[in-house]
Length: 120
Image: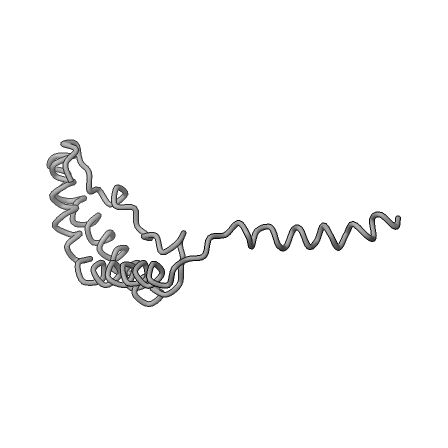
């Protein structure tokens, strides 16, 4: 029993101090740079979100044929709203290191940037 009582504080100290030594300190310049990229990315998505309507229309017609004339604008309006809202969130919360470590919230491949031809 005495060994458990004596070992418990040592185990607690080990658990609390080892992760602190494992983390690398970030330079303030790197943090400011990532925050500024997130702010600019958010502002860009807010301003250019409306471009998703003709882009998705073109991509849907190219990939699906004539049905794309109906589906494309609907898909484009949804993607424009999605991109604009996520851009607004990134703009407002540019100082918060989420998701990941100032990573983009939208995966560009998810937005239909790469089509059948493989060109961006």
